[in-house]
Structures are given as structure tokens and as C-alpha cells.
Length: 363
Image 1: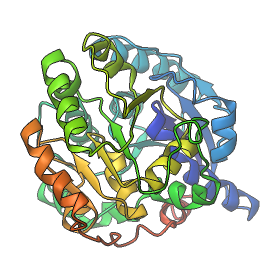
Image 2: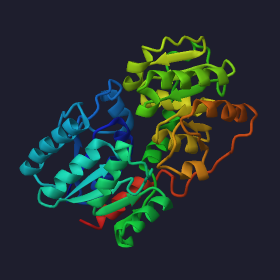
Image 3: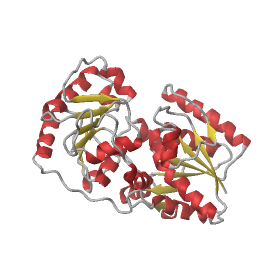
Image 4: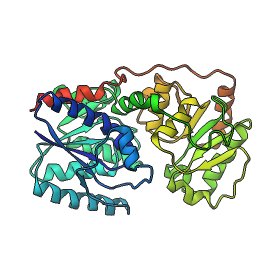
């Protein structure tokens, strides 16, 4: 069986690394599963270098579509037309897509229209119920044409059942991003500026912001940052800045001695910062999951989340996008009243093995 594994953005690679490792393990046992790693080139990140691939145990891509950036339509079209040529040259038996980025949706559509290639979706069924999010559209479209649904939580299973997906096509396997987190945790290491800034464990905050409603408007971003600085009690705020955010930040003119802006960090450095922080303030999806597993308080500046289990079970608190909500929740943090949280069921580092066990039955 030939499987195409599709990855296009940085979070995808964390999710597919353990799947590739599990397939390689089965190959050594003689199982006839072959794979091609297809990098769509949706994102280019200088920290997604050869060393990053080496750290996560990811081989160099078999195929790089080099789709590049552009508008939603331009990027989707580029990925689809380039992946179509790959399928015409050599048709796989199955494609595996992960998460909710443009590459996920674009390659799933192309595969189904090009000879009805079977589609497996890792992280299927998660929903924010917010159609203003491009990711939500990607999830819904992908799941509408998926054949095999690999899910991370009971909530995702119920979301799929509610749309008529039969149980025999839903495989509750756990979370492959957590597979990577748990495997790589012993290798997390300090970023170069740790000693320069005299950082101490649990005595600094980590901040990430990239969603349009938080960062595209100068006034909105300024109000959020001013509120965070005011509520921080002078603790260092480490802000690895997304390129989208940097465009707006330059116009703010905000200067504060405890706000430290840096470029995006490598996976191992960033998660070291998260693991040893007092709390993370974010609008990311994946960080909500990682902080829950690392037992780090997470303050999420969003009105909804596709990962509700990080709030109901984990260490995450959803506070919306109103800057006025930041101070009360920070006071709760400094008072030592943050919830301890639990790790969701099956987030145990074995999700990829469960996925490949399903694939073996298709051979």
C-alpha cells in the first residue's frame, strides 16, 4: 500500500513525525506500507530547517510542491494544481492529511476528484463552530469527503456522529502532536537569550498572538499588549513574534522594559520556554493542548476554541478578546488559584501506533 502523507505548515510536521516513525517501525517488521512525504510548501519557516527535521526524526520530503504564499484562493489553487500532477504521475492508495490548514483541504479535494483516492484525516472532527475562521471551513470541507477519521477526543467523535459519520469509520486514537511533545520533552533546551535576560523558571510569561482579530488592527493589538504589560507585575514577557503580527507591531510604538520580542523559535526552544513559564497567553490552538499536557496555565484570547477539553479538563481558560478580561484572570494566576488540570484520555504518546495499526488492516 502506498500512502501520501501531506504536510504544509509547521504544526503539521509535529503531527506527522510520529506517524512516519510508526510506519518505519512496521516496515522493519515486514509490513507492506510505503509512504511519500509530500511537503506542499504552504509555509516557509527558517526554523523548519534540516536540523528541525532531524530533531523530529522526519526524513526529507519525497516531494515538495513549493506552493508558496498568497491569498487563500491563490494558495489553494497552487497546491491543488501541483498535487494533481503528482497524482497523475503515481496514484497512491491513500492520502493522510492532518489538522486544518489550507494544504489539508486542498490535497483532500484533489485526491477525491482524481480517481477517488481514499482520504484519512488525523485530528478529524474538532470544531470551533466559528465560520469566520478559515481553519473551520478547512475542517468541515475535509471531513465532508474523508473516508477514515482519526480523532483526538470524545468530543470530536460526537461532532462526527452528529453529521452522520458511522462509527466504523471513526477511529479514536489520541493526539499525535502530544506523541511528539512527550518524545521530545527530554531534549527541550534554553534559547540563547535565557541567560542574557536572567530568566528564572515560573518567573516569566510567554506570549503568542497571530489571529487576525487580535493582530491586524493597530488599536486592538495595542490595547491587548498594554493590558498584558499592566497586569504582568513586571515579570518578563517573552513574545516570539509571528510574521503576521510583526507587520502591525511595528506601527504600535510600544516600549516596555519587561516586554521582550524575538523571532519565532525552534520547537525545542519554544517548548522549553512554555514548560518553565508561569503561564502562556496565546490565541493558538495547538498551544492550548501542549500547555494542558505540560500542566502550565494557559490564557487564551479567543471567543471560542476547537479544543474544549483543554478548558473542561486541562489548564486552559478561554477569556475572549476584550482586553478588560486580562487583568482579572492574571490576578487569579498570581493569587495561586489556577486550576491544576488533567490530561485528556489517550493523550499518552501512542496515537501514531494506533493509527498505523488501523493502516495495517488495510494492506
